[in-house]
Image 1 (cartoon, rainbow over the protein chains, first blue to last red):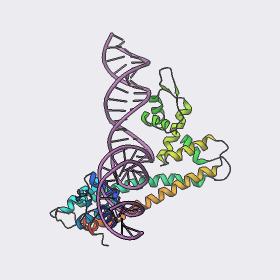
Image 2 (image 1 turned 120 degrees about the horizontal axis):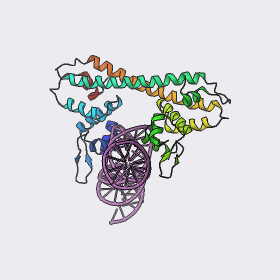
Image 3 (image 1 turned 135 degrees about the vertical axis):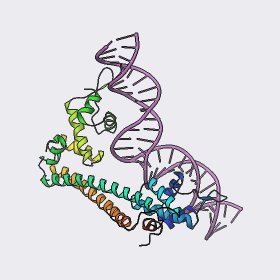
Length: 131
Length: 131
DNA sequence: ATAGACCTTCCCATGATGGGAAGGTCAAGG
DNA sequence: CCTTGACCTTCCCATCATGGGAAGGTCTAT
């Protein structure tokens, strides 16, 4: 299976497949006589794994750890859970930050008449930060 | 005022002050005979403005627009509000995405016993993506 | 005079992703 | 047999905001 087919089968672009290989996240693909990468079902599976983990926001470093655990049939699920828990906590922290931003901005937007007049509480806040 | 003093006064690091100048976000500072940058109150004000806008998640491009509007005393507040509204919408979209991730992960974490046993719904989900 | 705290510019790195160039390979059709 | 177009390869560059660090110049206090 060429890289293009593997990309179609996994949902990971060829570009990213090469990238994942270069950073050691995906195993180096077999090479054919013409130097083309050659993929099998197992590789496609790994790529799908990576894709799904990325969709859940895991970093490549975290995914590397998760893949290693997945390959280790004797893994303690504790470790998997720890990684996931830490990631959830990180997500929640970032969500809280962004909600604070959005909340402040919504208040400012609500106070701004938003017409042709120049008076604007949004700019006032940015300029002075008084509040 | 040297760049270090301006950094202390504005809360923007010297490194970032130079960067903002290089990308055209901050006005180029006056230079003294020794080539040191020289800042005045107005510059510090602008830097604080930038700092506060960054804290609210605005991109440098958006901040450039906001600064221009702030300097234009005849601006229509409509334009400021439009920028802020678009940014709020973007924040909300990203928050929703991350909440979806966190929600999925919380469910998986809750289903994982997290002990020394290898069985793990988190890995199962990543590996097969059944659901 | 010297030490240490500044300042300057320039290059490199981050993390995940993509664009694009230059060049090799393969398959199908004239 | 040759051409065309769709592949593939590697390599470099860009994004975005931020920081590290080197090499070298300047200022200030002792």
